Image 1 (cartoon, one colour):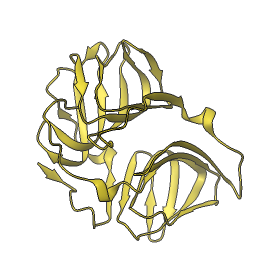
Image 2: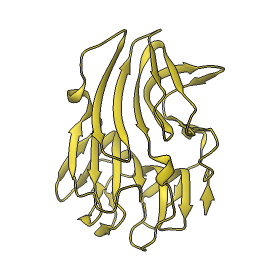
Image 3: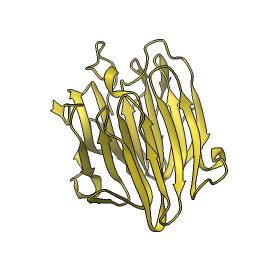
Image 4: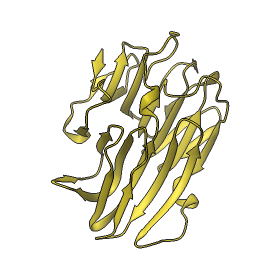
Length: 227
């Protein structure tokens, strides 16, 4: 499957308008945002776990990163409440699920194969001081990408001209771009060279942003996991 697989094009997906699709595991559904591959794929997805559902144990050959959007995600390593950002690099293993149910935003097969930096962070705890109405947390940075989380006050503007493409998920509130309005759970991907200028709506916004990663996008080479 190729879905939004042309990384030279601007893409906006209003994920709340997408139908939930069944995954290979009962009680686990997903909304696909972009994808290269079949069940094993370079993928960006919103995944919903029904209460008591879980995936079988598996190894993330290509790595995964995710944000818990609501509820509590769980595996044998602990509980991950809403607002948690997690990186599970290649070779990591777990048995994911949720006793009470949860929703996560997850990216698969988008790691440097040599990355072994595994961690979890409460994104709000990482925020720096506000400057011109914007507070930002640097969640991760390496030679391939920069991952951040920002609070944007009403009418304040977050800008970026980062090379290598920019991807943004609105976690709460809303932002206005030139000629476009994005609300909660809207996902935007900008190609290399397309700058970002996002102004907070009446209630401000919380956004997750990744940049620099699009030149490395390719289909997975080794079958292993799917979400």
